[in-house]
Length: 307
Image (tube, rainbow, N blue to C red):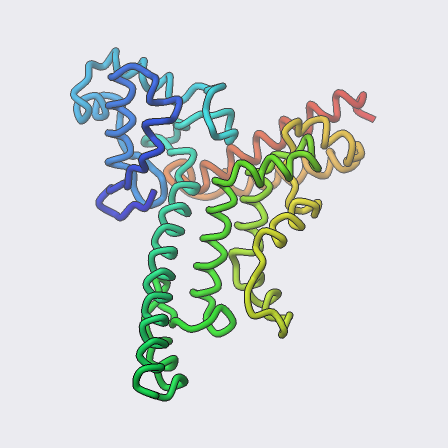
């Protein structure tokens, strides 16, 4: 979901196979209207009457449809926030899965870039064989092509943009590889494979730190991403569990929960001390996450008898 400042959203074909598409026409129309005016940060700035006017719906129909989009959806393919699609904030709504679709759009662009780069390389190689030209000169010329991130082409060792494109393509492929996911699920029965995969991608492998780590292996000419991500699922820092309360109780002590609650409280106070924080979607989302984590820690501590 790649959005510019004018409020443009790319629609993926998967929308017609989503649980949302089984909703009534009014809700589908409202959802597409919201996507069309959502900004690059996933914020839809509008009042309910404004939404109704833009979607050509009545106030009542808009209220009912917004309620559906804000409610949990047990049939949603996304486990993020129980399948909710919208979160009400000051001045409008946040599209909850904005970041997921934004990354998917970027991955599509980078795959297209890599495909073009490989086609150009094969054409240059073929031309070198026919003309006897210096391959290194051709490679140098090819590597000057601009990447989607403004870097240069070449190999993944030479360019973070090339590395990032390969990593994103691999990550996206594994997200769609249900057979691979089922194989991993067998070894990690209670692990949320997709969210754990996403955490490994977002927190490390899709970053320059991940690139630097991969370059430490001087002998590796290509990257085995299936093996990399399979190993990542076994690392505690990447693991997101389906039954998070049970997992938390297994791994945390009462002191840990008190520390979490204190940290969340300080974070909430910091945000509340920021002028006009309710008008900033990123701070609203952070505040909501801190509040939810504080409540979850409080409940977990209560279950343990508040020891």
